[in-house]
Image (cartoon, rainbow, N blue to C red; front, side, top):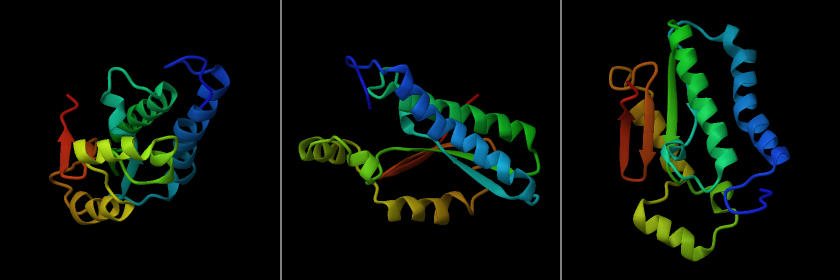
Length: 154
């Protein structure tokens, strides 16, 4: 990410991140929306960082907030489908590891835990998707190594 000083992102980088995350999500949903059957479940991937009042990666967080807002809008506008927004904590991917020292990764692992992609997929497949009563349309769900919790968005 191109930054002039801590927390400051150049306009070009801001637009690039938003185009990939927020606009890409919206375009993908719009492209496939007509193919969804009644009672289909659509999962939008945001981030737990949207609740961080002082994000260290503001363009990323802003784009993930836009995804959560778009998902909430779709949950209201599309009563025939179930819309879920996932707010995962750290997942051990190359993007998560990018630019972090091993000490930082170890500290995060000790403090909040780091999910493997397999663990993340299992939580989604075995807990969240089959439990429509627990996670109805419009739910935002925080997912950490040792915690899965529906956020009260009201």
